[in-house]
Length: 116
Image (cartoon, rainbow, N blue to C red):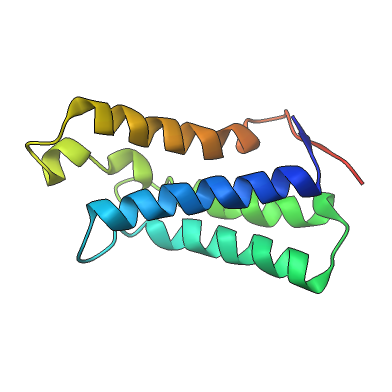
């Protein structure tokens, strides 16, 4: 995937949708991994505010946080909507998986090419 400024904007928007969903589902305390998504979104916003151009130097920071959001025992892969919300419609679980995949596609190993 080629990653330029437009793709970073899309990633920020997809992170926002994912974070909105999690906030909606968890009215109280947010899961631990949520903080990494929030950090990623904030870093992207700072990237644009500062006016940086070197995405190749910036992207590893996002990759670091994406990997951290998947840590064993406390990562997003351990988040079970059905356990937290026993009566949930299975389609909601599929929707969550789709939101996660929409963000994850930017971090597929070895596929990122950077546009200047």
